[in-house]
Length: 443
Ligand code: AMP
Ligand code: GLY
Image (cartoon, rainbow, N blue to C red; front, side, top):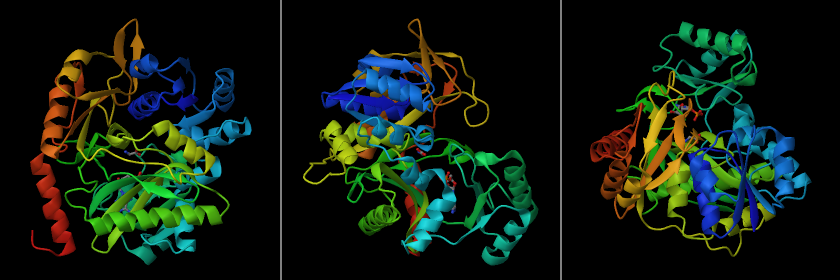
Protein backbone atom coordinates (compact mmCIF):
# COMPACT_ATOMS: atom_id res chain seq x y z
CA UNK A 1 0.00 0.00 0.00
CA UNK A 2 1.26 3.48 -0.90
CA UNK A 3 0.33 6.02 1.77
CA UNK A 4 0.67 9.79 1.97
CA UNK A 5 1.47 11.22 5.42
CA UNK A 6 1.45 14.94 6.11
CA UNK A 7 3.51 16.69 8.80
CA UNK A 8 7.07 16.81 10.09
CA UNK A 9 6.84 16.57 13.88
CA UNK A 10 7.34 13.74 16.34
CA UNK A 11 3.66 12.83 16.08
CA UNK A 12 4.17 12.31 12.37
CA UNK A 13 7.41 10.41 12.94
CA UNK A 14 5.33 8.03 15.10
CA UNK A 15 2.63 7.84 12.41
CA UNK A 16 5.15 7.14 9.66
CA UNK A 17 6.95 4.51 11.72
CA UNK A 18 3.66 2.75 12.51
CA UNK A 19 2.69 2.79 8.81
CA UNK A 20 6.11 1.47 7.79
CA UNK A 21 5.79 -1.27 10.41
CA UNK A 22 2.57 -2.29 8.61
CA UNK A 23 4.59 -2.70 5.42
CA UNK A 24 3.27 0.45 3.74
CA UNK A 25 5.36 2.57 1.38
CA UNK A 26 5.07 6.02 2.91
CA UNK A 27 5.42 9.36 1.10
CA UNK A 28 5.55 12.48 3.22
CA UNK A 29 4.85 16.20 2.81
CA UNK A 30 6.38 18.30 5.56
CA UNK A 31 7.64 21.84 6.03
CA UNK A 32 10.85 20.93 7.88
CA UNK A 33 13.42 18.29 7.11
CA UNK A 34 12.73 15.71 9.84
CA UNK A 35 15.58 13.14 9.61
CA UNK A 36 13.64 10.30 11.25
CA UNK A 37 10.77 10.67 8.79
CA UNK A 38 13.07 11.18 5.81
CA UNK A 39 14.83 7.91 6.56
CA UNK A 40 11.63 5.86 6.75
CA UNK A 41 9.86 7.47 3.81
CA UNK A 42 10.07 6.32 0.21
CA UNK A 43 9.81 9.92 -0.87
CA UNK A 44 9.42 13.35 0.71
CA UNK A 45 8.44 16.84 -0.39
CA UNK A 46 9.41 19.90 1.64
CA UNK A 47 6.30 22.04 1.24
CA UNK A 48 3.92 24.20 3.19
CA UNK A 49 1.56 21.58 4.61
CA UNK A 50 -1.45 23.86 4.11
CA UNK A 51 -0.71 24.24 0.39
CA UNK A 52 -3.52 21.89 -0.51
CA UNK A 53 -2.86 21.86 -4.24
CA UNK A 54 0.84 20.97 -3.88
CA UNK A 55 0.15 18.22 -1.36
CA UNK A 56 -2.56 16.68 -3.56
CA UNK A 57 -0.29 16.82 -6.62
CA UNK A 58 2.49 15.05 -4.70
CA UNK A 59 0.07 12.37 -3.47
CA UNK A 60 -1.22 11.77 -6.99
CA UNK A 61 2.29 11.69 -8.46
CA UNK A 62 3.28 9.03 -5.91
CA UNK A 63 0.17 6.95 -6.55
CA UNK A 64 -1.04 7.16 -2.94
CA UNK A 65 -4.07 5.00 -2.20
CA UNK A 66 -4.54 6.29 1.35
CA UNK A 67 -3.66 9.47 3.24
CA UNK A 68 -3.15 10.43 6.89
CA UNK A 69 -2.83 14.06 7.98
CA UNK A 70 -0.96 14.79 11.23
CA UNK A 71 -1.53 18.48 12.11
CA UNK A 72 -4.75 20.50 12.28
CA UNK A 73 -3.88 23.43 10.01
CA UNK A 74 -4.08 21.41 6.74
CA UNK A 75 -7.43 19.96 7.88
CA UNK A 76 -8.76 23.47 8.38
CA UNK A 77 -7.48 24.33 4.89
CA UNK A 78 -9.60 21.47 3.48
CA UNK A 79 -6.81 19.01 2.67
CA UNK A 80 -8.87 15.90 3.49
CA UNK A 81 -11.71 17.16 1.26
CA UNK A 82 -9.27 17.79 -1.61
CA UNK A 83 -7.52 14.42 -1.26
CA UNK A 84 -10.85 12.61 -1.29
CA UNK A 85 -12.00 14.65 -4.28
CA UNK A 86 -8.84 13.40 -6.00
CA UNK A 87 -9.90 9.81 -5.21
CA UNK A 88 -7.54 9.25 -2.25
CA UNK A 89 -9.34 7.86 0.81
CA UNK A 90 -8.21 9.86 3.85
CA UNK A 91 -7.96 8.76 7.48
CA UNK A 92 -8.41 12.31 8.74
CA UNK A 93 -11.59 14.39 8.92
CA UNK A 94 -12.86 16.75 6.28
CA UNK A 95 -13.05 20.45 7.00
CA UNK A 96 -16.67 20.30 8.20
CA UNK A 97 -15.96 17.57 10.77
CA UNK A 98 -12.59 19.08 11.77
CA UNK A 99 -14.57 22.09 13.05
CA UNK A 100 -14.81 20.08 16.26
CA UNK A 101 -11.26 21.40 16.77
CA UNK A 102 -11.02 24.46 14.54
CA UNK A 103 -14.03 26.24 16.04
CA UNK A 104 -14.49 26.17 19.80
CA UNK A 105 -17.96 27.69 19.47
CA UNK A 106 -19.00 25.01 16.97
CA UNK A 107 -17.83 22.33 19.41
CA UNK A 108 -19.63 23.83 22.43
CA UNK A 109 -22.84 24.47 20.46
CA UNK A 110 -22.81 20.93 19.02
CA UNK A 111 -22.52 19.41 22.50
CA UNK A 112 -25.24 21.69 23.86
CA UNK A 113 -27.64 21.09 20.95
CA UNK A 114 -27.30 17.31 21.16
CA UNK A 115 -27.26 17.15 24.96
CA UNK A 116 -23.88 15.42 25.04
CA UNK A 117 -22.75 14.78 28.63
CA UNK A 118 -19.55 16.48 29.72
CA UNK A 119 -20.58 19.90 28.35
CA UNK A 120 -19.77 23.08 30.23
CA UNK A 121 -21.65 26.37 30.55
CA UNK A 122 -20.44 28.89 28.01
CA UNK A 123 -21.26 32.18 26.30
CA UNK A 124 -20.10 33.26 22.84
CA UNK A 125 -18.69 36.78 22.75
CA UNK A 126 -17.66 39.23 20.03
CA UNK A 127 -17.65 42.47 21.98
CA UNK A 128 -16.76 43.69 25.45
CA UNK A 129 -20.50 44.04 26.16
CA UNK A 130 -20.91 40.34 25.36
CA UNK A 131 -18.08 39.53 27.78
CA UNK A 132 -19.79 41.63 30.49
CA UNK A 133 -22.99 39.66 29.93
CA UNK A 134 -20.99 36.43 30.10
CA UNK A 135 -19.57 37.42 33.49
CA UNK A 136 -23.08 38.34 34.75
CA UNK A 137 -24.20 34.85 33.80
CA UNK A 138 -21.15 32.76 34.74
CA UNK A 139 -19.37 34.82 37.40
CA UNK A 140 -15.63 35.39 37.16
CA UNK A 141 -14.51 31.76 37.62
CA UNK A 142 -14.15 31.47 33.87
CA UNK A 143 -11.78 30.76 31.01
CA UNK A 144 -11.49 32.88 27.85
CA UNK A 145 -10.70 31.17 24.53
CA UNK A 146 -10.43 32.62 21.04
CA UNK A 147 -12.78 30.63 18.78
CA UNK A 148 -10.12 29.69 16.19
CA UNK A 149 -6.81 27.82 16.27
CA UNK A 150 -4.03 29.22 18.46
CA UNK A 151 -1.67 26.25 18.76
CA UNK A 152 -2.89 25.60 22.31
CA UNK A 153 -1.60 28.95 23.50
CA UNK A 154 -4.71 31.18 23.34
CA UNK A 155 -6.53 30.06 26.48
CA UNK A 156 -6.44 32.27 29.57
CA UNK A 157 -7.74 31.04 32.90
CA UNK A 158 -9.09 33.25 35.68
CA UNK A 159 -6.95 32.93 38.79
CA UNK A 160 -3.91 31.94 36.72
CA UNK A 161 -3.45 34.28 33.77
CA UNK A 162 -6.17 36.79 34.68
CA UNK A 163 -6.64 37.94 38.28
CA UNK A 164 -9.33 40.62 38.00
CA UNK A 165 -12.38 41.51 35.88
CA UNK A 166 -10.20 44.17 34.26
CA UNK A 167 -7.69 41.50 33.21
CA UNK A 168 -10.53 39.57 31.58
CA UNK A 169 -11.65 42.65 29.63
CA UNK A 170 -8.06 43.43 28.68
CA UNK A 171 -7.58 39.94 27.22
CA UNK A 172 -10.91 40.16 25.40
CA UNK A 173 -9.79 43.50 23.91
CA UNK A 174 -6.55 41.87 22.81
CA UNK A 175 -8.37 38.99 21.09
CA UNK A 176 -10.57 41.51 19.27
CA UNK A 177 -7.82 43.95 18.28
CA UNK A 178 -5.17 41.37 17.35
CA UNK A 179 -7.66 38.86 15.90
CA UNK A 180 -6.16 36.07 18.00
CA UNK A 181 -7.25 32.74 16.54
CA UNK A 182 -7.92 34.43 13.19
CA UNK A 183 -11.02 36.41 14.19
CA UNK A 184 -12.64 38.56 16.86
CA UNK A 185 -14.86 35.88 18.42
CA UNK A 186 -14.25 34.13 21.70
CA UNK A 187 -15.87 31.65 24.04
CA UNK A 188 -16.18 32.47 27.72
CA UNK A 189 -16.75 29.27 29.64
CA UNK A 190 -16.95 27.91 33.15
CA UNK A 191 -13.58 27.12 34.73
CA UNK A 192 -13.15 23.44 35.51
CA UNK A 193 -11.14 22.15 38.44
CA UNK A 194 -9.60 18.68 38.41
CA UNK A 195 -6.99 16.60 36.62
CA UNK A 196 -6.70 16.60 32.86
CA UNK A 197 -6.33 13.56 30.68
CA UNK A 198 -6.38 12.72 27.00
CA UNK A 199 -8.48 10.04 25.38
CA UNK A 200 -7.85 9.30 21.72
CA UNK A 201 -10.04 7.06 19.57
CA UNK A 202 -10.05 5.70 16.04
CA UNK A 203 -13.34 6.72 14.37
CA UNK A 204 -14.99 5.55 11.16
CA UNK A 205 -17.93 7.96 11.12
CA UNK A 206 -20.02 5.96 13.55
CA UNK A 207 -17.81 3.61 15.55
CA UNK A 208 -15.34 4.83 18.17
CA UNK A 209 -12.45 2.53 19.12
CA UNK A 210 -10.67 3.99 22.17
CA UNK A 211 -6.95 3.92 22.90
CA UNK A 212 -5.18 3.94 26.28
CA UNK A 213 -5.64 7.15 28.29
CA UNK A 214 -2.64 9.49 28.37
CA UNK A 215 -1.71 12.52 30.43
CA UNK A 216 0.13 15.37 28.73
CA UNK A 217 1.94 18.22 30.54
CA UNK A 218 1.30 21.58 28.90
CA UNK A 219 3.26 23.83 31.21
CA UNK A 220 6.85 24.51 30.23
CA UNK A 221 8.51 24.05 33.61
CA UNK A 222 8.68 21.44 36.35
CA UNK A 223 5.91 21.44 38.92
CA UNK A 224 3.41 22.51 36.19
CA UNK A 225 4.74 26.07 36.20
CA UNK A 226 5.42 28.53 33.41
CA UNK A 227 3.74 29.24 30.10
CA UNK A 228 1.48 26.80 28.24
CA UNK A 229 3.19 24.89 25.44
CA UNK A 230 2.17 22.35 22.81
CA UNK A 231 3.01 19.70 25.46
CA UNK A 232 6.27 18.80 27.22
CA UNK A 233 5.71 15.08 27.69
CA UNK A 234 3.14 12.43 28.51
CA UNK A 235 2.66 9.05 30.09
CA UNK A 236 0.27 6.11 30.01
CA UNK A 237 -0.26 3.20 32.36
CA UNK A 238 -0.22 -0.52 31.53
CA UNK A 239 -3.97 -0.95 32.16
CA UNK A 240 -4.90 1.98 29.91
CA UNK A 241 -6.00 4.09 32.89
CA UNK A 242 -4.00 6.69 34.87
CA UNK A 243 -3.09 6.79 38.56
CA UNK A 244 -5.95 9.19 39.29
CA UNK A 245 -8.32 7.93 36.58
CA UNK A 246 -10.93 5.29 37.40
CA UNK A 247 -12.48 2.82 34.98
CA UNK A 248 -15.82 4.62 35.24
CA UNK A 249 -14.24 7.97 34.24
CA UNK A 250 -12.62 6.30 31.24
CA UNK A 251 -15.90 4.63 30.19
CA UNK A 252 -17.80 7.91 30.62
CA UNK A 253 -15.23 9.68 28.42
CA UNK A 254 -15.62 6.98 25.74
CA UNK A 255 -19.41 7.53 25.80
CA UNK A 256 -18.92 11.29 25.44
CA UNK A 257 -16.68 10.73 22.40
CA UNK A 258 -19.21 8.31 20.91
CA UNK A 259 -22.10 10.72 21.43
CA UNK A 260 -20.06 13.53 19.88
CA UNK A 261 -19.29 11.46 16.78
CA UNK A 262 -23.01 10.60 16.53
CA UNK A 263 -23.91 14.29 16.88
CA UNK A 264 -21.46 15.18 14.08
CA UNK A 265 -23.03 12.54 11.87
CA UNK A 266 -26.50 13.96 12.54
CA UNK A 267 -25.18 17.37 11.48
CA UNK A 268 -23.99 15.86 8.19
CA UNK A 269 -20.31 16.01 9.17
CA UNK A 270 -19.22 12.40 9.40
CA UNK A 271 -16.06 12.10 11.48
CA UNK A 272 -13.45 9.73 10.09
CA UNK A 273 -9.99 9.71 11.62
CA UNK A 274 -8.39 9.77 15.05
CA UNK A 275 -10.35 11.92 17.50
CA UNK A 276 -8.67 13.47 20.52
CA UNK A 277 -10.67 14.33 23.60
CA UNK A 278 -9.07 16.53 26.25
CA UNK A 279 -11.00 15.96 29.47
CA UNK A 280 -10.97 17.34 32.98
CA UNK A 281 -12.08 14.84 35.61
CA UNK A 282 -14.11 16.89 38.03
CA UNK A 283 -16.13 15.96 41.09
CA UNK A 284 -19.02 15.39 38.65
CA UNK A 285 -17.00 13.15 36.31
CA UNK A 286 -15.21 13.92 33.04
CA UNK A 287 -15.96 17.19 31.22
CA UNK A 288 -14.70 18.21 27.82
CA UNK A 289 -11.99 20.87 27.64
CA UNK A 290 -11.50 20.51 23.92
CA UNK A 291 -11.56 18.12 21.00
CA UNK A 292 -8.79 17.83 18.45
CA UNK A 293 -9.37 16.42 14.98
CA UNK A 294 -6.12 14.42 15.00
CA UNK A 295 -3.71 12.55 17.24
CA UNK A 296 -2.20 14.50 20.11
CA UNK A 297 1.41 15.49 20.13
CA UNK A 298 3.09 14.06 22.30
CA UNK A 299 0.25 11.60 23.02
CA UNK A 300 0.60 9.90 19.60
CA UNK A 301 4.08 8.75 20.63
CA UNK A 302 2.63 6.90 23.64
CA UNK A 303 -0.22 5.11 21.90
CA UNK A 304 1.45 4.37 18.56
CA UNK A 305 4.53 2.97 20.34
CA UNK A 306 2.15 0.55 22.10
CA UNK A 307 -0.09 -0.33 19.15
CA UNK A 308 0.29 -4.01 18.25
CA UNK A 309 -2.27 -4.13 15.42
CA UNK A 310 -1.78 -3.21 11.77
CA UNK A 311 -1.91 0.61 11.73
CA UNK A 312 -2.25 0.91 7.95
CA UNK A 313 -5.31 -1.38 8.10
CA UNK A 314 -6.81 0.78 10.88
CA UNK A 315 -6.21 3.93 8.79
CA UNK A 316 -7.81 2.23 5.82
CA UNK A 317 -10.80 1.28 8.00
CA UNK A 318 -11.19 4.88 9.19
CA UNK A 319 -10.88 6.27 5.67
CA UNK A 320 -13.34 3.77 4.22
CA UNK A 321 -15.80 4.28 7.07
CA UNK A 322 -15.64 0.72 8.39
CA UNK A 323 -13.61 -0.32 11.41
CA UNK A 324 -15.82 -3.33 12.14
CA UNK A 325 -14.01 -6.63 12.32
CA UNK A 326 -10.62 -4.96 12.70
CA UNK A 327 -8.38 -6.03 15.49
CA UNK A 328 -7.17 -3.06 17.56
CA UNK A 329 -4.80 -4.14 20.28
CA UNK A 330 -2.26 -2.32 22.44
CA UNK A 331 0.65 -3.75 24.34
CA UNK A 332 -0.30 -3.82 28.03
CA UNK A 333 2.71 -1.76 29.05
CA UNK A 334 3.37 1.67 30.52
CA UNK A 335 4.92 4.47 28.47
CA UNK A 336 6.66 7.71 29.35
CA UNK A 337 7.49 10.30 26.72
CA UNK A 338 9.67 13.33 27.44
CA UNK A 339 10.28 16.09 24.98
CA UNK A 340 13.66 17.71 24.54
CA UNK A 341 12.92 21.33 23.57
CA UNK A 342 15.03 24.36 22.65
CA UNK A 343 16.05 26.68 25.48
CA UNK A 344 13.43 29.41 25.75
CA UNK A 345 10.65 27.17 24.40
CA UNK A 346 7.32 28.47 25.70
CA UNK A 347 8.38 32.11 25.40
CA UNK A 348 11.15 32.64 22.86
CA UNK A 349 12.87 29.51 21.55
CA UNK A 350 16.52 29.41 20.58
CA UNK A 351 16.07 28.21 17.03
CA UNK A 352 18.74 27.31 14.50
CA UNK A 353 21.00 25.81 17.20
CA UNK A 354 22.75 22.53 16.54
CA UNK A 355 21.84 19.56 18.74
CA UNK A 356 23.59 16.21 18.99
CA UNK A 357 21.52 13.05 19.09
CA UNK A 358 23.37 9.80 19.79
CA UNK A 359 20.87 7.42 18.22
CA UNK A 360 22.87 4.28 19.00
CA UNK A 361 23.18 5.12 22.69
CA UNK A 362 19.45 5.92 22.91
CA UNK A 363 18.64 2.58 21.34
CA UNK A 364 21.07 0.81 23.66
CA UNK A 365 19.24 2.42 26.59
CA UNK A 366 16.09 0.69 25.31
CA UNK A 367 14.34 3.99 24.56
CA UNK A 368 12.43 4.93 21.41
CA UNK A 369 13.45 8.13 19.66
CA UNK A 370 11.15 10.35 17.63
CA UNK A 371 12.48 13.42 15.88
CA UNK A 372 10.22 16.46 16.09
CA UNK A 373 10.42 19.91 14.50
CA UNK A 374 14.11 19.96 13.70
CA UNK A 375 15.91 20.48 10.43
CA UNK A 376 18.60 18.21 9.11
CA UNK A 377 21.26 19.89 7.03
CA UNK A 378 24.35 18.01 5.77
CA UNK A 379 23.98 15.39 8.47
CA UNK A 380 23.68 17.97 11.27
CA UNK A 381 20.50 18.64 13.23
CA UNK A 382 19.23 22.13 14.06
CA UNK A 383 16.42 23.33 16.33
CA UNK A 384 13.42 25.32 15.13
CA UNK A 385 11.13 27.36 17.40
CA UNK A 386 9.16 24.20 18.18
CA UNK A 387 9.95 20.97 20.07
CA UNK A 388 13.06 19.00 19.06
CA UNK A 389 13.08 15.32 20.03
CA UNK A 390 10.72 12.96 21.86
CA UNK A 391 12.19 10.07 23.86
CA UNK A 392 9.86 7.27 24.95
CA UNK A 393 10.43 4.56 27.54
CA UNK A 394 8.18 1.48 27.42
CA UNK A 395 8.10 -1.02 30.30
CA UNK A 396 5.88 -3.11 32.55
CA UNK A 397 5.39 -0.20 34.95
CA UNK A 398 5.63 3.56 34.95
CA UNK A 399 8.69 3.71 37.15
CA UNK A 400 10.75 1.64 34.76
CA UNK A 401 9.35 3.40 31.68
CA UNK A 402 10.29 6.73 33.23
CA UNK A 403 13.79 5.51 34.00
CA UNK A 404 14.29 4.33 30.42
CA UNK A 405 13.08 7.63 28.99
CA UNK A 406 15.54 9.53 31.24
CA UNK A 407 18.35 7.18 30.28
CA UNK A 408 17.64 7.91 26.60
CA UNK A 409 17.44 11.68 27.05
CA UNK A 410 21.00 11.78 28.41
CA UNK A 411 22.17 11.18 24.87
CA UNK A 412 20.64 14.35 23.43
CA UNK A 413 22.72 17.49 23.97
CA UNK A 414 22.74 21.13 22.97
CA UNK A 415 20.99 24.29 24.09
CA UNK A 416 17.89 22.38 25.18
CA UNK A 417 15.83 21.51 28.27
CA UNK A 418 13.52 18.77 29.50
CA UNK A 419 10.81 18.47 32.16
CA UNK A 420 12.34 15.71 34.22
CA UNK A 421 9.38 15.48 36.62
CA UNK A 422 7.03 13.91 34.04
CA UNK A 423 6.06 10.35 35.04
CA UNK A 424 8.05 10.54 38.33
CA UNK A 425 6.46 9.03 41.41
CA UNK A 426 6.37 12.27 43.43
CA UNK A 427 4.44 13.98 40.65
CA UNK A 428 1.99 11.08 40.24
CA UNK A 429 1.37 10.83 44.00
CA UNK A 430 0.63 14.55 44.15
CA UNK A 431 -1.91 14.22 41.33
CA UNK A 432 -3.66 11.29 43.06
CA UNK A 433 -3.82 13.22 46.34
CA UNK A 434 -5.20 16.30 44.60
CA UNK A 435 -7.83 14.29 42.73
CA UNK A 436 -8.86 12.43 45.90
CA UNK A 437 -9.40 15.76 47.60
CA UNK A 438 -11.54 16.99 44.70
CA UNK A 439 -13.58 13.81 44.76
CA UNK A 440 -14.06 14.31 48.50
CA UNK A 441 -12.08 11.17 49.40
CA UNK A 442 -9.44 11.03 52.09
CA UNK A 443 -6.00 11.50 50.54
P1 AMP B 1 -7.05 24.10 25.14
O1 AMP B 1 -6.26 24.86 24.13
O2 AMP B 1 -8.54 24.24 25.00
O3 AMP B 1 -6.58 22.68 25.33
O4 AMP B 1 -6.69 24.74 26.54
C1 AMP B 1 -5.37 24.80 27.00
C2 AMP B 1 -5.37 24.58 28.48
O5 AMP B 1 -6.19 25.54 29.15
C3 AMP B 1 -5.99 23.24 28.90
O6 AMP B 1 -5.09 22.19 28.82
C4 AMP B 1 -6.40 23.53 30.32
O7 AMP B 1 -5.31 23.42 31.20
C5 AMP B 1 -6.83 24.96 30.26
N1 AMP B 1 -8.28 25.03 30.08
C6 AMP B 1 -8.98 25.08 28.94
N2 AMP B 1 -10.31 25.12 29.16
C7 AMP B 1 -10.47 25.10 30.50
C8 AMP B 1 -11.61 25.14 31.37
N3 AMP B 1 -12.86 25.22 30.91
N4 AMP B 1 -11.37 25.11 32.70
C9 AMP B 1 -10.12 25.05 33.20
N5 AMP B 1 -9.02 25.02 32.44
C10 AMP B 1 -9.17 25.04 31.09
N1 GLY C 1 -0.94 17.51 23.34
C1 GLY C 1 -1.84 18.52 22.97
C2 GLY C 1 -2.21 18.55 21.55
O1 GLY C 1 -1.80 17.73 20.76
O2 GLY C 1 -2.97 19.42 21.19
